[in-house]
Length: 447
Image 1 (cartoon, rainbow, N blue to C red):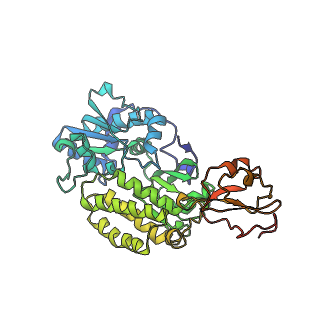
Image 2 (image 1 turned 30 degrees about the vertical axis):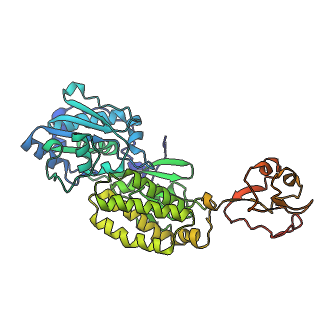
Image 3 (image 1 turned 30 degrees about the horizontal axis):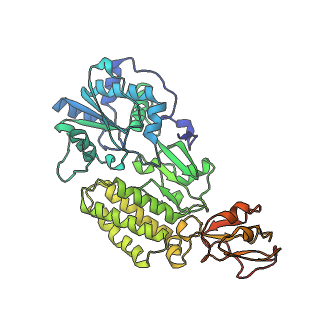
């Protein structure tokens, strides 16, 4: 579960602020909504435009998507557990203001939240699906609701002012609903010009923390306030994000776009080639495979990224990513395919030196990629006790008392017996970053 932290400009926290009660004056609430210019992650149109649409066509639908999170930013899941009252209040307001006839709740199996809208006598349809970033595409969400199939179909069907079943449809996720709740409260209290805020999950080694920051805050300022100093380039967004130089974070400013759901920060112990591999594999798995460019592009990206971490790639492979990436960005059916290509292109552009080290120097600079790992004796720790020599059934260890021992990696079977008896912890797996002597040297003398 995410750990909540104060973000930049925490004094204007709204989404994570404590619940402030139901809206009691129905007429006042509806009038507030009618004048509400409110952008969501899905729609650029104002809520006022949606109300006009609903009045003109009737039979409106509220589609709530809690399944579009990247696995690096479980924002919907967090809010569905910790902000249920706000979600219910916002849903009830939208239902009343727009005359909603049906609520469609799309969620992954791990989320138990169900809207409490029984008193309003609307139909609530629950649809369980896998967590998938493709569902940020409206047409994919509509298609799933209508048919049960997760496919992006923007070239098959257009949704100008109408959505599910050709009915006016307002789409929101949990963060949008919490923001909607705060916006209506501001309208009622006469607060017109306060800054909007965005939830950002900050991922570091072994920890994910949730911050709320004012829109317009720079990535550098947010990380600084959270006490985080990037050692390597960072990933803004997940599989549909982009790698950004750690020295240029001041130029990137938080917006309501879902790309700002997360910032992944890497240390010197993290491998950016491995991070790229994980992103490429995730994109390959999440692609709805509707269009050729996304289906084939994510497959090739994943294969190249896998080859990089195994030392099998070539410089031509990086050139191929830079060549075909822009084609996919321009021609993929939906924003998922376009932005998944962006993530790979940005990794090559920003992390080239670290990627190339894997297949040019045949080493993982961070010691993460297992394809390069070999069992060695760390000369800084070896005391020359000889215990490892005694237990090696393959006679793969050379050395004598008080001298640094050396493992013949061609003979070593990685049985781990030597590591088990070494009280100094000198026998480790590494990828070539530990320099070892070519012949036994007196313990403590090798530099």
